Image (tube, rainbow, N blue to C red; front, top):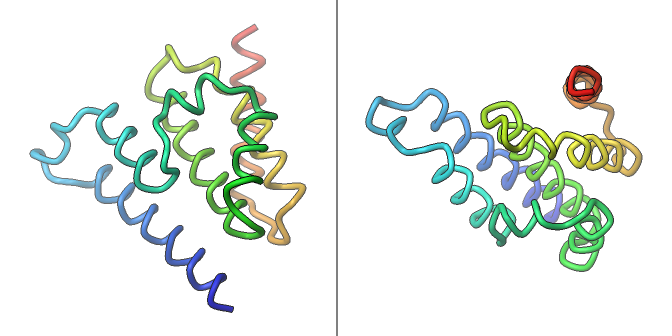
Length: 134
């Protein structure tokens, strides 16, 4: 019960931070995307963006399995998937991350006890983007 509350607070804090950045004031928007991305990775995933970029999906999942348990592991992978999605959409140089993002979302979908329409829409969107890329 306490762990579930912790996970919900963790996700809530992440999405509030993300929302503040998107809908922030002009001064806040002057922060670069990379600064925001770095800050979110360090705060919520305890690693840098390049740590995850340089690893393959299997290594990333192994990292999360070794570091976090149960629902918290899925929540952290969900946070990473959001950050990878934002990166891929806003920075064309990171488009190669789409297949990694797809694999992470499939992993969450298979392990999660919660169905998510949003996750399904993201999976479809990623598949479309991957088809366009070919």
